Length: 122
Image 1: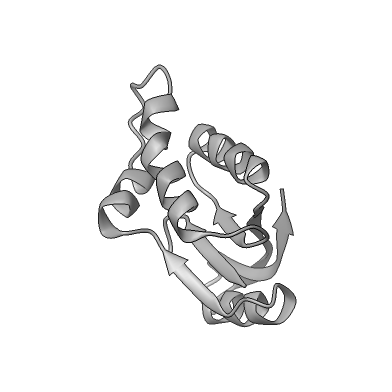
Image 2: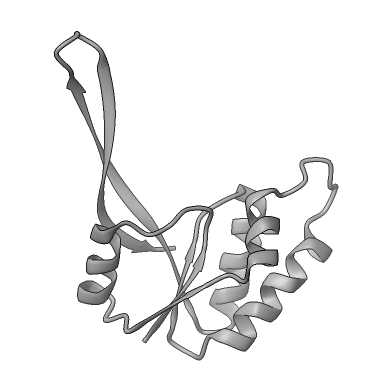
């Protein structure tokens, strides 16, 4: 089972472990560098994301097979298009859920620490 990674960050060790255990992932597939740059910087000026999304559709079609998982987290509009595309292709789009813990350090400064909880299907 594969997990395509369509998001702007690197997986944490906790996320990798959870994906292997809960989703039975055996292969992680990252976006190629050119697509990663596009995914991380979606132009706010675009009226429509239809053309912008096409290279991502091609990547998904070339990389995934029916039943694979696709982690989609990023620009809301692009994420929506990619999630819908994945569903039509019989793939399982997911996102990572987190829990925020607030800790106060010795100087009294509050810090938020986000901890991975699970992957949730869209």
